[in-house]
Image (tube, rainbow, N blue to C red; front, top):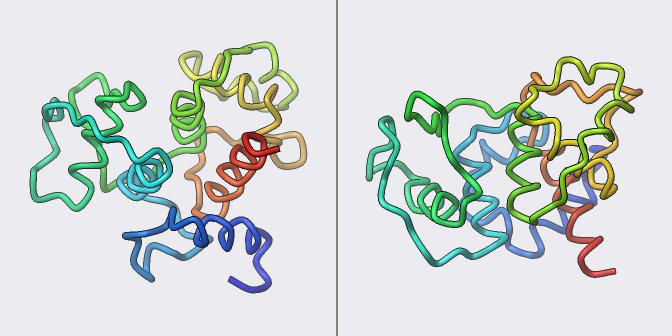
Length: 171
């Protein structure tokens, strides 16, 4: 990770064992993070114990992130898509990842804050209140005035957001 802009964040996350269960191929800081890996990382952070029943049409018990998905569902962090899928093997967008973090840490909504981004119109209406809350809380900052909500998030970006959130909790 040395030399990567997210080097310090991933090192801190790794030291806290938040990346446990990830393989070398999923630890590429520039890789589009699969949803299931995001769910595993979040479950590693919160150590949820309660598990919901499987409500997802596309989730099989043999899936490597079966338990983390059901933990996040029981906690109310993860709801899946309207069609009943969770799409654990597909990449997760920046706005999806950010609202999951916001739900996980119970961030207050603040839709007005999204308008600091030039591409605020590209943020889904369903995501604006919590994305704005993450901005207001200082957890996300964007890139050169942009949030890029529809782009897939990378592991480096996820560890940076998580590092920002954890630093705030412990300061």
